[in-house]
Length: 171
Image 1 (tube, rainbow, N blue to C red):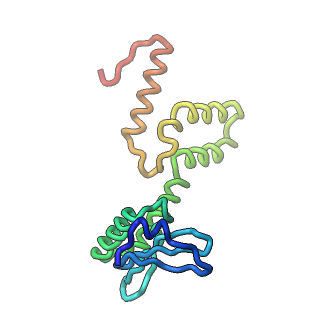
Image 2: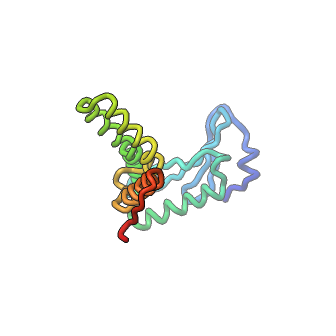
Image 3: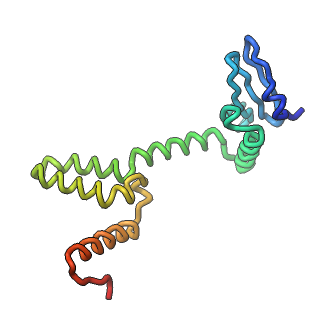
């Protein structure tokens, strides 16, 4: 039998955790402390697996059902939803650890010993002012030539305006 929002909201807390089933592998765990968590139970390559879909009420009934459907679509394509989620998390962490800002900081620290204190400070200040606000948070693998060209052109235009020189790109 399918769950209703009313059943979920009025589910009583018991001394032991228990489940409320929505069907097709989706159920809600009611913890002894009152927490409510969505779980999806499925089978992949003959193994029973369990995937957390979030906490209620942050993830409502409709969203939990939608997440179950997304998992079903993946399973229909012979993709394990749990493995896919883990891979996405690892990739997100990798991208965060390898943002342009992180790589620039590492590069600066590596080369800073070769420069005078003033030169190293000047380079870092230029990165902070002109480049990091534009692409600092982006994964290094997502930055392309056109992104860098846009930054260079913006810097060039800024220098030209300050100096009063006339200069045009490609013209």
